[in-house]
Amino acid sequence: MDVINLLPSPPHFFRIFFRLALSLFTSTLHANYRRVLPGRRSYLDFDINTETGFFPHHPLPRLPETFGIWERALAEANRNLSLGANNCEEATRRAGETWRSNIRTWPILDTEVLEVDSRLLQRAHLVLAWLVNFYVHSQPPENDGPMLIPQSLTVPLTIVSRSLQIAPVLTFADTVLWNWVPRHADEPLSPENIQFENLFSGTEDERNFYIASAKAELRGVEMLRIIDDYNNLPNLTDLTSISKVSKSLARLTVIIEDINEIIQSVRPNVDPHVFYGDIRPWFEGSGAKGPDGPKWVYEGVEDSDKLDLSGPSAGQSSVMHALDIFLDIDHKLRQKRLPAPSESNKRADHGFMERMRRYMPGKHREYLNYLAGTPRSVRELAQRIPTLREPYDAAVLALKKLRDEHMKIACLYVVTMSRSTSTRGGCPVSAMMERLETSRKGPVRGTGGNELALLLKAGRDATRRAVLKDN
Image 1 (cartoon, rainbow, N blue to C red):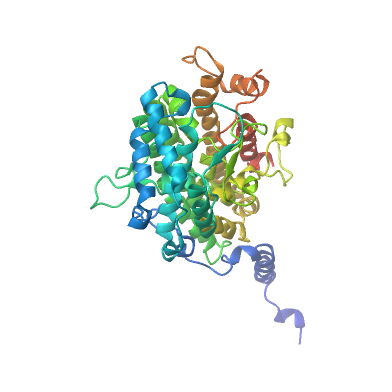
Image 2: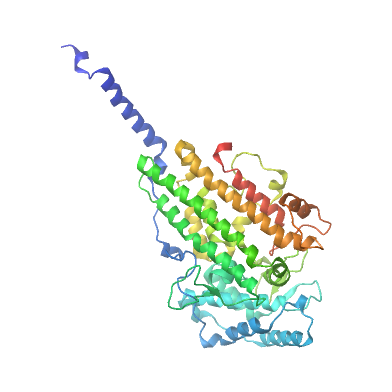
């Protein structure tokens, strides 16, 4: 028998061979992309709500009457206290000193009863952290020595913070995520149905500043769904899945653009002079003036000099951290990407973003660690699948543009206010950065004491280096 006649015709034979080879190649190359996140977990495991994201679904409850002195002191501070540096009226100064004297006489309350409810712990953290900043910043700036904060605040705050795995100081969660009530009690939380209870300055500008932050967080809820859907696709190598990923990246780009617009909305609603002079000083934490500036000392807390005591920052937004992880933004400069880091990039604090996670609620930080552990890098997938490169780059460039615009906001609200005697003028970003780095007064710093110029430029440039077109 002629063996050759038993074989299929050459065209059909080669088609079978090619399909088999392609299948084996794809199976090997994309093995990681057919796996879902290891040990898939629910949003509930990370205290994330499917509708409100990192916000609790309902406003936090008031503390039991056992802790009434805390709640009443916070309400009084909201009504009566003013910034010590701006306090020119003797009656207001006396009221502030009386308020602080009362706190120094308080007993250290036992918080064990709060351990049964995480929402009560969150409320306790909010109340105590606000009291600490009211205590510190309502005092006249009479000396540059350490600021001693009484143990009636610091001891319970530190204990509560350990339970929540969050820094024992005012954070983004305290000012935005936990600080709200609905405008209409019978309606769910939404960008239109939110208002903020506690205000340092009592101004509408401060209220509008928090509202802009809240709207950005709530817009990011869809982003979390996109990330979850991507990580749980059963297979990323078939045409249907690739099409879904492409559409998801396009949706992600729109969300980032929307968040950018929300951030820009502070311009007509928050006056730069009010922000810089009346709001921002309240946010400053320990060492806000730099490495040699005065530090906070937590009375009754061992090794309080080792605590994380910077102020609240947009860098503590879990939504933005999740986005950076998903798009594989290399803030630590560990990857070889183009363009090469500049000298200022190299001098920046490469651990800043990671350190900001210590100011997040522990469950939210756990979620970010969970995301970072996925074997599915959307950037690597886009490198391998040509049709995904353009939508991936579009999302990265939208994020880069957001950070460009954030630099302009920093210019207007911080740099121009701090550097110019005629603060009504404009400030081009390039000129702003030069002034940040060369001013005779030293670098402009964030509320936690970090050099603002290096941080903003490093974050923007790290985002730009993720673009595949250049790599």
